[in-house]
Image (cartoon, rainbow, N blue to C red; front, side):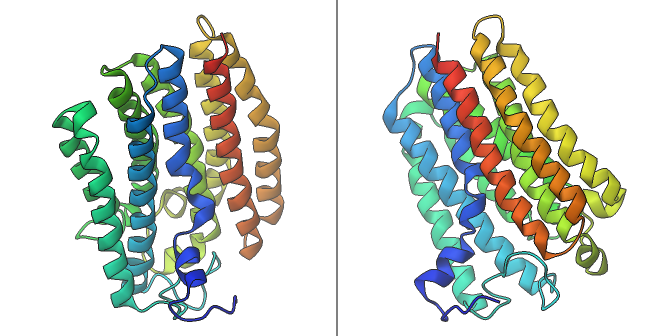
Length: 296
């Protein structure tokens, strides 16, 4: 257990779960590269998208920290990185307030996107905020009913990439949907590692993730297939951006290595090492795809 002073900067930094923030930044990186590839990159909306994505993800991490504590999913048996509220580093009330502050700040960043994407962005932003809260809160929390993977694929993949491109280019672009699926599948694997590690405690606390529902063997191969599928989808770009199809192949050795280590470790706190590797692999995938899109 880390020694962390209550309400310290370190406590709040750990609560933000910085290793997972690649899931918020990579979609904007890929969307911006795609916009640049068609001559439509715009710095200000890209920065606003990045600010919204990171603040919304931090809000989601804070909300998960709070609501999992309230639902007693997090306790002394937790195998994952320590949660701030459950560890006593931050009070539940302070975490709830911080969640609301992060949401408000995300909304301010999102309001700036109206100038580039029109009033539609209010609807998109509202859906994102509602979804991040519904992940662990409300009468039917998505993470507790096997829908967490769908949430990540949709909001950290498709929505994030498609609309980050839209506010820069001003139109919807089919390749953005493919790029969104690529990023989303990579991001889902961050959740898969978390759920694979926590499958036993999730089962006892009635948190029905896909791995609790379908089993640990499914979870292991789900991780493998997601990474392969992401790279296969990149083949869509081969006809007009060959390197965007070829360079992501460089992600596969790192993905296979992480998967093999996951199989060897199989259960326990050591799986936290795979969580960091998976986030780094997502960043690598995003960079390789982005570079491929930028090179003619």
